[in-house]
Image 1: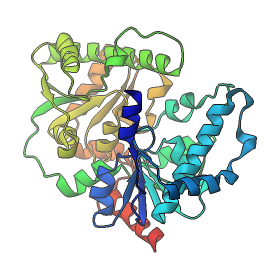
Image 2: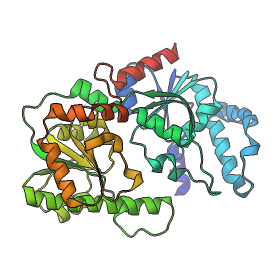
Image 3: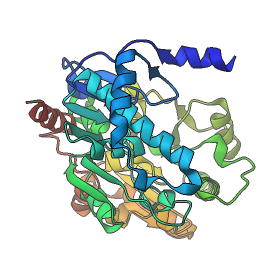
Image 4: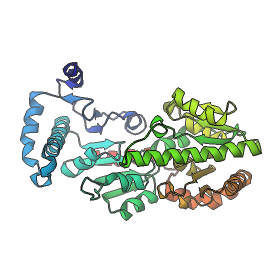
Length: 392
């Protein structure tokens, strides 16, 4: 059975020639918003797909001379060696396509980072797909020897100057930053969004629920610690919102994350049957539409907060446990820190009553710093122009 599953992942053909390679099969938005008519080939990462042909075997074998034996740890020699062989295999696949540009929307991919350094023939571009925190640039990078690993790549389309400062402060090595704003939300706001006559909801909660956050979490590794921390923060935020709704009569809509029955059950058990749910439909921009239909969007540290904050929309980051992983002080009045319910309630009511023009005056500088969205030159247009320049 294992052998038959392996066979389904093997393609006995060469990757299709193309001037652009997309690394990982998360390629819909790159093709739809950036490349459009430009031809591209998508290379997924093992174990999803594996190309095997005589040409690729020969190319990979010839590239074995580039293996850096100094990087191989004696304690994990087989793992390190396999990783380097696989790097050379991926480069053999890219060589086969004769691509001039390699692009990915998985900006935290170690494979992509390494290839961008190994391959001087091509231009490599990573597009940020989510808000980056200390977990991304510090905690998750601890090696087995307690040394912190360094993120190193050539070109990075990031959200804003906040990301540049965060990566630089934590000692990472990125040649070129392009703080252009968030790709998908920038496209939605500049192309799809239409003005609303009147909001439908008072509050919109961006769900960060996941089943793994609320079960029995054992161990003390990075994943376990992170899961316990996130679960506790979400639960605390829900308690504040439940009390707020009961005291004020404000209505609430919840944008789901997974469209999972267990997710709905979790929120129904907390909020009862009065809340409304918006099912996640990424390609139809369901969360952005619900956010625009709401007077105030609240969440913990969801990427959606940074995205719609850059539009001048009212949001509130909720860091109730006062945890440095969820800090966003650059958001000013749109950032709440601490476990005092009365202060939380006052902040929410203040934001709701504040005229939008006044809110934008208070937050425009912080919004641009966090997510450098420019409606006159949205991210998808900037990225495309840079890609075209690299191709020429």
